[in-house]
Image 1 (tube, rainbow, N blue to C red):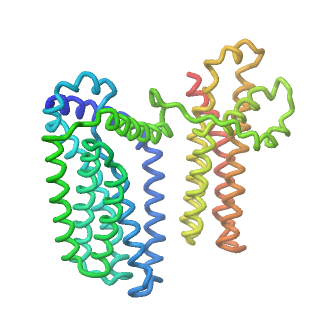
Image 2 (cartoon, rainbow, N blue to C red; image 1 turned 30 degrees about the vertical axis):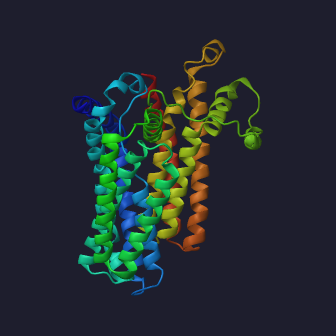
Image 3 (cartoon, one colour; image 1 turned 90 degrees about the vertical axis):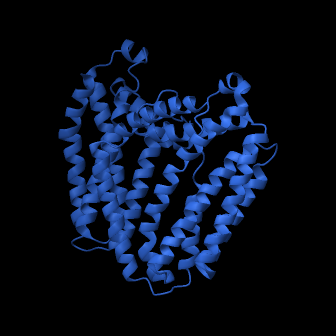
Length: 403
């Protein structure tokens, strides 16, 4: 069973590396750098206005750390066939699950260390924590997340453990964080170690005597893997993952201006596909909301100029796969339509979408920054970005797609 885990782990790592290369391409890395820079700029400005020892700092810190610890789930890499083929080896399953347990702790520990680094100035100023107290709080959070992973693995060995262990995880998770923030970090550390020791003992006892619930464990792993692949599907095509398509009848009024003529066939098809397919409309909504949040948080005109142009480019880049979305439909080849009509229709759709995004961001800039001369800097640059993308850059991208 140990060798089986190693084989699946190696295969899993190779698959993740393949998708991560597509996710963290040069465009996304540039966008990520600007977004992190913008968030860091806003965070540093917000800390300067944060009063010392403000009352709401403790609840915010507890809520953020507590929710992050509850985000993570064990990675078992179990497959549907295991319920039948590995059942005779259930007694030796402990070796497999120990490997899964160790791997499942990698992302939580790294995430909590980064979160602790990010929250250090907030905890120091808002809560009045020393550096030692911040380190102890991060250690407590790491012990809690290790315990939560152990409890979730223990749940696979009990007849009806879900609600009991879920309640235990939530109550003790936030309870220990409350003790650490409001009372004493050393006391919370001791209690966290005691809880961890008890849960580890309970889990190892289940490994020796319990009956493993294969069906529940396989369903949990399938759901975890599906959610991760859905994230990857935002950037590239993932086998076995299809985007959600909804009718959205309440948006039919958007298509009334499109006259039912042969020259508008592709434009109507692309417009319907954009609205109905969550892969495109959902991405447009999410990126626009992030841009609006950054506009609200940042009042530096030069940074907002870069952010506006960047988010317009990101939307345009993510719409490109829609151009070839309907190439496999036979009717698009039978119907007398030319390639130039298709390209013109797609450019028109991209123009409408980018102008809509530009209008939304313009309204946000005017509302949050006011009617000043410098406010028009990001507005004008973003509009120029739309024109450059549609008129010059997009045709070159479409020619590459055709080849």
